[in-house]
Length: 115
Image 1 (cartoon, one colour):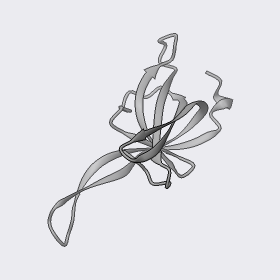
Image 2 (cartoon, one colour):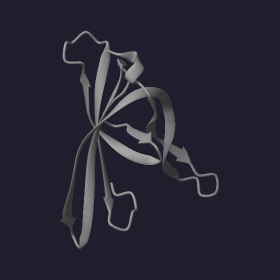
Image 3 (tube, rainbow, N blue to C red):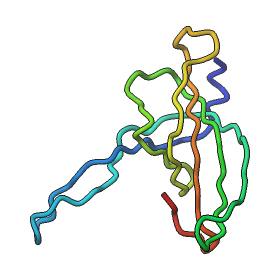
């Protein structure tokens, strides 16, 4: 792994239920888990129709140093865009030096985050 290629900063966020003081109900919230250096490798993009909306999706790959505590249940935030982590893989040699995070973002044409 070439550490010089880790030239981007990403935030890994995890979902947590937070109790609303006013109502006492649990509200889903995304909290910062870890801020990490990463390499961004653009992958693909596509458009499709879901219901009556045109939805564009974009897949990107981030390479980071190996960590055992990142799961596909987490999300990733980079440059103001939120990505769903769809895959977590060790480096191709299995040495646990780096890992690949395959991430997907889907957003309707009007620009809102679509999950």
